[in-house]
Length: 300
Image (tube, rainbow, N blue to C red):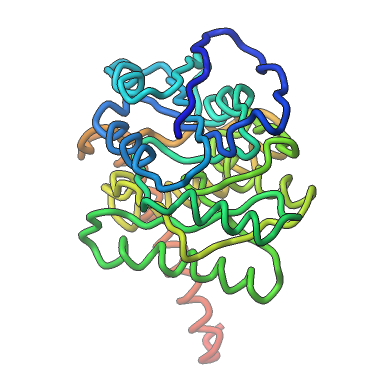
C-alpha cells in the first residue's frame, strides 16, 4: 500500500518514527522536467505486488513543466529542492524518507511488478547487508551497443561480486539501502555522487548485495548522441575526470552533464566539443600505436 507523507517545502528531517510504524520502503524519485516519463514511473510503482507499505517521494528539482502536478495526481509526496543537481535532490528526498529502507530510482524508469518484492526477499535473505543493488536495461534501444553495454557492464559487476563479495558499481536507478546507515549524499559531487561515492561509503558500513536478476528499465535518451559521445564525454569526462576532480578538491570543479530532455541539436557547443575531444583521443591513440609499431620493427 502506498502511504503519503504531509507535503512540505521546508528543509530538514522528519522525526524518527518507531520501526513498527514505518513503511518498509521509501522510494525517492528526483525529477527535472519529467512530465513525459514520470507518469509511467509512478504507475509502475503503483502496480507493485509488494504487500507492505510504500512511501513515494518525488523531489521536484526546479521543473518548468507539469512534473509536480502529474506526481501529485498519482498520490506521491512532492517536495521541492531549489539547489540544482541530482545529489541535492536525492539528499532532500532521503532526509525526509520515513521508510526502513530507501529505494533510489529515476523518473524515466519503470519496473517489473515484483521489483520491490524481490528486493525485500534479498534483504530478508541477507539480514546483515546494508544495501542491495541491481542492473538496469534500456527500453526500446535500437542500436546493438545500447543493448549490449548494460549486459556487459552489469554482467561484470555480478561476476566480481560473486568472486569477491564486493560490488564495484551500482546504478542510482536500482539501489535500496538501510535508512539508518545512510551516510548522506556528497552534494559537492555532480556525477557519480549518487552511485560511486554512495556505494563506497555504504560498503564501509556493511555488505552490499548485487541481484543481477532484478533489473529496472530506463529510457535510452541519454544514449541519443551515440557510442563515441557516451564513451568519451559522458563516461570519461563526466564520470571519470569530474568525479575524481570534484572528490579530490571537495567542490564541484566540473559541473553536471547536460540533461537530455529533448532532441539533440547537432550544432550545440557540447556536441562539437565532444567531436573535437573524440578526434584528439583517436589521434593520440594512433600516435601511440604508430610509435609502438616503429619500435617493434626497429625503426626507433
